[in-house]
Length: 411
Image (cartoon, rainbow, N blue to C red; front, top):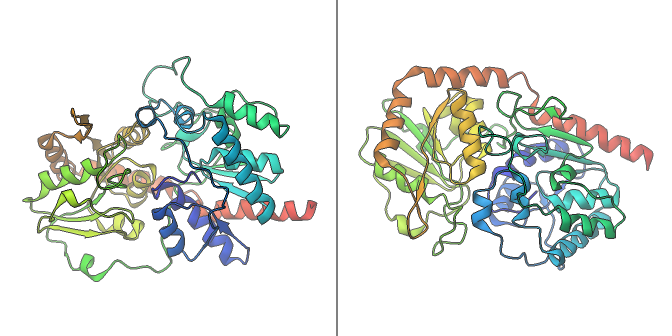
């Protein structure tokens, strides 16, 4: 998976990996970033060590990444440097040749997909709808895609040609794989009719028979319970500001809810709360990580940054959301939730110092409205019912297992 220090991509691959490992297959994952590595360890799975040839990535264009029209532009922020793409491709090709898997299962790591094609290993991809080449992109509600948007295709095609592969007009084409699973439904993640995909419904990680800690269950039912999930508050560390930061979710929640008659559980996805936040209000309770499905089912309302996994967790549990999207991809997810009637969106603006800010009064009013008006919960519950028709991680694991067995028979 793309090695971002977030839980979205590993959360959709870990459940599949755990099922396959439990069936007796040898399974390894690869993500060296701290938060994903913690999740992989929590699942008891093998995380391959970082190769000595792992190249230092060039500084991505974060402004472009955070405002990207679609996933093709997002990839252009990271893979236009030819020497880096060459080094990453050589690294992944070396890893695949050494580990010799029967199947590669990927979620949005372009160069891993390229390496699977080079080494002729069957490739299954696990994507949200907006990452698929047949999607309408992150700004799906706007007119058709503008022309001449950035793409890494020329660079990637040049490197692919060194290994004898034909060029592709878009990088995303390489992510379609031999089989592509969409972790949503046609309602939550719509694609054009000619997209060759299998919808499996949301996939989220949670250990079997897990329970929420006693301090969560002891909060009682007298007051509404709001679950705040910020994702990574500071991608550049506690002292640095980046356009992708989600600290605005924490700040806004504190400003709006500190004196409200609610209980708040704040989780940060194996990330620390930045020191600048200071002491949390008395009605706030923090944990670096809690089982997401159980927490979504326990809460009355989710407040999050618009990640696809967070959006799906709320819909799976039939819980409405108030979303503060921090990048364009997350805005697309947030608008899908609101279009289904299952939440409200509060768009942040950027101040002169680069920090995001939100109209606290607007946020507070929307939180109160979603808690007060039952139609939001009813809409979320309707979507949850439709999601239950899909097979999730077991369905994906079944298909991947068949791919692996076919590969072994033909070897």
